Image 1 (cartoon, helix red, strand yellow):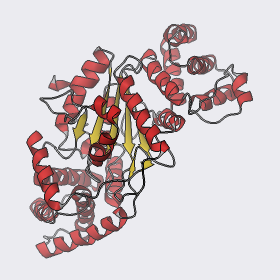
Image 2 (cartoon, rainbow, N blue to C red):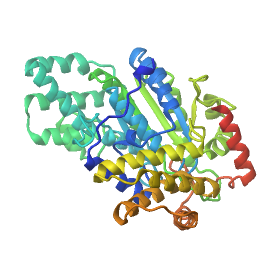
Image 3 (tube, rainbow, N blue to C red):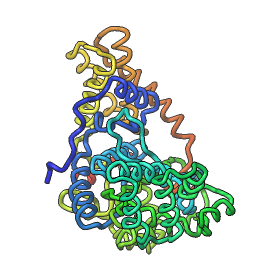
Image 4 (cartoon, rainbow, N blue to C red):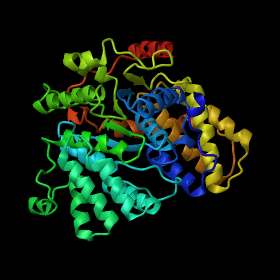
Length: 463
């Protein structure tokens, strides 16, 4: 079944390559598109998700699953979620990447979550530089136009009736709005009608009078937000897509906030428990839901909420080739050790830089500089993510060597670069506030260095 895993595209345009380097070099974050060109070290997890979940569970058995993705600050949670999104697109699944945050999208506000998913849901692109089809209304419009082109208007209307008009969705109002929108696109009806229906489907606030004009008497709200989300997921496969991948990324912070868990925090955990339960039933068909958290979630949050702890199991099981049904993906346990991982990332960035600028560097000198940087970063025992720091420094060095000429850096120069960048990352990191599920919470103090070392040994044993 390993042939199911899609290989990275062989062609990367200079334009996309420059965008990748700009995004990763400026702030150390992964590129939103083209992630496969710089990805390394997590292939085992991607193979399991592709084979056991996307292919077997979703596409064949029409099931669903919930997984936690665990990683420390800068360990690559967002990077991994982008990889899974890329995998979903290659399998004809719709995918939505949503950041859970206290102000814009807390998990205790179901309407905000639904709205974010409805706005971020996206079709696979024809290629990395093509325009996206993003947002539930744009996807419905694209699907309707495709069916009209393939079958004609009359057959397209029959398709709407057969696929969605009588579908048993969680919210009849959602079904009615989606069907009316599809029919308006097929019939070429007025733009005002489509605008009203599109806004309702995206969960936006529209006057009740405008909704009633379209026969909609229920408005999206926090009371029905998760039911709307269930309806969206249920509608996806009926529209001819293989399924849905939802990627929820907890906005990660380091510093703690003193105080007891609030009502909002309790509601948040209850909603998470509800999502876990729904993924175990048929109410969320053909869905893979990944939620990215820090390790403090298992240490501090799970023990305080037995109902959620029971559903995820205790002690928590870690996903591996020998335990593919486990609920937690640990990004501290990768396919490569730190030195090997950074070397491979560095080599991939060299390939991207060569293509981006038509650059032909002195390869032995460049690889020597890479080896010295990797050695320095891994030896420093940094208090912030060594991967993020490494990427920013290496892209900066690639620019300097490309613009200023090839040269070999000595160890003193490399150490100075690392320590300078470390200061910037620490200053940025210490400005943050601890959250879980978009709600500020009290977090336990960081482990002592010895504890971290012991934890790493245990994680390595799991691989």
